[in-house]
Image (tube, rainbow, N blue to C red; front, side, top):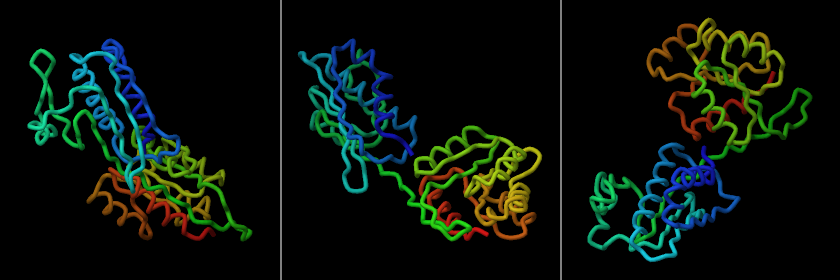
Length: 276
């Protein structure tokens, strides 16, 4: 899940020098209550940067002052990012193909266009519609003494691939939970014994103890976590076969590449398991 304001401001910073050199003032209007969005941070940042550069180049021949306005609004179940400039807009004859890859309206001396690929352009106004991320509402749980738990879940993430573990942790944290990352199975088992976690996500393939063995070891050491652990794997064939050959029963699996919605659904399943 992504913070839209962070992605937009990061894109503006990337092209800030070119905008300042062209005397362009950028106005950003992004309300504080905008929900997170689903998408790839780098690709989305590139889209915004390309639109800003298009605006900068369109304003080169226009009289001052030069303005680019960026706004964000909730439209139904989507967030709309609108980028407007004071340029000449897109000629009517070119609007139907402006989104085609490698199409360009630029003069040769200005640069090569590669097309925007997707979006909705109206004159000098670009709209980018983004799906709002699914935010998991964790059901009330029950503590051993029968009292309801009304707090965020504490999730242990185990994996020796830092990028994958960090991505999973970010998506879980954006859903309102607390995460801790362990890079080895042995370290994860030590952390789990502390009794501070409500669920565990572990990579299937790791040096030494694999995910199936780790889940068994944690379940033996912390019985309350039995049924609240899931495997993470990108092996669609060998992975399930490996699990079936070692595990004493079915284990939940989160397949790579995972999405926020898939994580939310699996967390709902794990958190609904009764604690022993």
